Image (tube, rainbow, N blue to C red; front, side, top):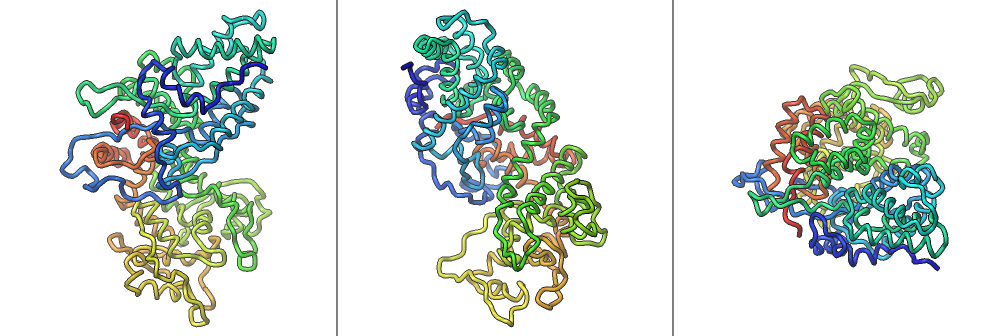
Length: 572
């Protein structure tokens, strides 16, 4: 039998030893990201800050100080997209990476913190082999990667050329001589033992895809001669960070070539490339994937709703709700390239027939079928923006009722980055039942007045009570259990509102909301909660966002040209 592809577990042991390029000798950083403490991998909401205190603009600390750098595992979609762009759609279809977990509300943060277990290592091994086998069924693509015509199983030079070409693309950097020798040996041995040149190529592909240099974003940086606590990401590292953040995939060969010539060494160069990237179709998909995570849209089609209470709710309707939210975000961010705060109170939406019927915008669902179109919402209506859409209203509700608390908690935590503590252990969280409790407002009064509960509920419940015209699946109503609903509310510090559109208008003028948007993007982009030393740089991004009329494309470019994105601290 021929030599098996080197396993991920084995490669993790000597990866640092065989890598003599930039960052050589950082073995401790590599092992920290793959075997260090992972912390709680729950899907907790992000809080205002991960730092040890201080004001948002840095307070007394005016100097920028980056967070220590950590390696980050590719997210599942990054893995799939990289396979697709390297080896084709068919190969990507058989890729099977481990499922992402979330930490502090973000999968990207878990990717930098949570260790791989044995099951995950085995899954990457099996996935790499399956992908390699499928890739070999596309001889035209393999021939392009080879760049040579093999003369037989013993064509060492052609194997070396494949290893050099494919390895550079897979690892997102040029291989060292030692690495080329190692992987050429893997390919050549397999080809000789099986008497087949292609068997060597397949073995090399499987081995490359199990390497930490493929599975992780390797970011070490170069020392900053003016600051021993800071490192500047190299052009090649920047190509990887930019591509996975803005496009959800591996950098192209053209971007790598540009980076290898120093074309991403300055903020101005990064800006120029980023401005091109955000016009690519992949940028729209990447932003949509980010918001599908942040707004918890991915699992909406599996929501459990009581069929007796909500007989019209179905997985197909839930999928349409998700598509509606993403369509509005895409329209504001890219098609209109307008003030991104418009997603909070937009007086229009996008819907197909069933969703438009659900909202009362068309007389029957068959009028449109599955055709999507834009609808202007009633001028005097309460529906508007993402908070008036079925995705949010259904997801943040109970099985058979609405939930003002869940909806208010979402606004505080996800839109404003204000962490809400869990209720005390001795508090009864169930709402009272009985004929005297006609509305959710009646049922919540106990929590609003109980000293153990009131502190948090007064922050959350008024927000949700102002949305009570929308039931647990986002249908509009005026009456609950025979009682006319009162949905006029006040948010301390923001003002009065009634309904989703007016709430969105209040939130769009809150600096907490726009600041939180920037923080959430930064956390996703870098894989960590911002620290005190990074706040001055992020405050500058906040200012640039406002100066640009709160346009998302400008924000993305400003973020990737910020020191907070371009620099990292000394590896842990």
